[in-house]
Length: 265
Length: 304
Ligand SMILES: Nc1ncnc2c1ncn2[C@@H]1O[C@H](COP(=O)(O)OP(=O)(O)OP(=O)(O)O)[C@@H](O)[C@H]1O
Ligand SMILES: [Mg+2]
Image (tube, rainbow over all chains, first blue to last red; front, side, top):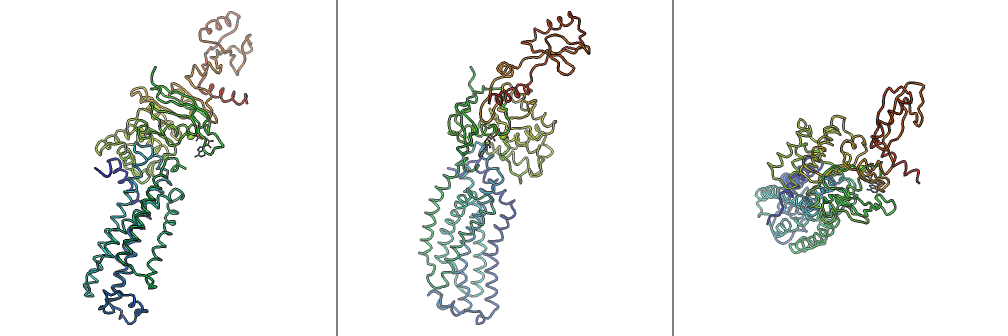
């Protein structure tokens, strides 16, 4: 069975073209991952390598956050470990969330804003096919962005690990994060945006709204530094399960709202 | 009897529950031919098209297109319908050609077939030179013609055209009208044409419906409409200055009277000459669609 029929593929291709030709969206989809997955890690690595660790403020306190597996690390290694395992995971939730919600905003709200959705609804494609093609297109695009970012990130971190003579960074936390939580968040970003698209008039407005869902994520990660809790594979697995359930419910809800009468209001 | 291509029964639509945009419309439109749907701004023409194409749900009543309900089977209806409305735009960042190719593909054509169909339509609508320019750089008229091309891309059997020639220069309007006419005559497409341009409508349409404030005032072909409202043929005569014949009314240089049909004309001419008038010119004036339209809309105001 094919996932998408030929006409649906045409819609996906058209959406990709549209997203690519919208400057704001294209820039977001490129800049955010480049900064988070490549630029910031490199910057941090350079800082660790060239600034003596006793000059970093609060280094001692941060050391206390280290788990057992990092017990024998020296100061530089510890700093790098902290960054890799406490800060960067947040980036890999924000990248899928940003890219999926921004592309969905362009694909759903943008189409409504430019009143091309009416034309699309007049084609022999059913409303369901259009919904499916658009949602899957956004998920695909965001998955590609996340995958490329992760490969680039893995290369940077591996280089850091080699320079600092540390073990390879990939652990269970990362695997669950990238293979389960990130895809679930991607779907969440798209479906959430479809829901929001019913209310917002311009896609800039809906992108702002999507900013609010990034906030809880940031809080979650800031929480780690207070020492209240630490990310564990189990916690991440639980989070993924929660998001998947939310995805499922939102999908049902969003597809019900996706009707000609509601879209053309 | 031919199957009615479009059937409307008690079709009613209210957007907000207060204002009734369309009030109990009953209308059957036969297969083949061009049906002109006339009415002033806000009459409910676009609303009717949106109901017939499944973009809106009727508040009451039913409508079918070739026996299929656009609300229940929108895909099947869209497969045989081409729709052009002012509010259905195309993609600004794509070229005219890419737009047509895309819409051909959504109708199930594969790559080469859609390319061929797009090129065919671009040529027949005089857009070939602009094919590789972005739609956002098109003028109003060009956009309009591309919309028409889009509505034709999957070779529909029924065409819904909502003011296809508004905003076109006379030359393009003529091209578009000729195209609509040839589609209807040569390929048997049924055309549902909403328009304000009564002069064009008269040249194109086989039947008319006149709508005002959601109410259908009249429907039928021009002779029927004339008969029902009492618009008659007029016999007009230009006589030597100063002469005033009996039983004729003066209208400018002309003296005129209404006749039941053309056969009365020779008798009238003979009578005028026999009674010693100098006849310079005689003519028969048939009521135009414009006359009939105004007669209907004015009569409605008077009766209120
Ligand atoms: N989306 C909408 N929401 C509320 N009312 C609407 C909407 N669209 C149209 N109407 C109302 O419905 C009535 C009929 O409008 P419609 O657009 O069908 O007129 P029309 O005959 O197409 O006019 P025009 O010749 O100006 O295009 C009008 O009174 C209009 O105000
Ligand atoms: Mg209209």
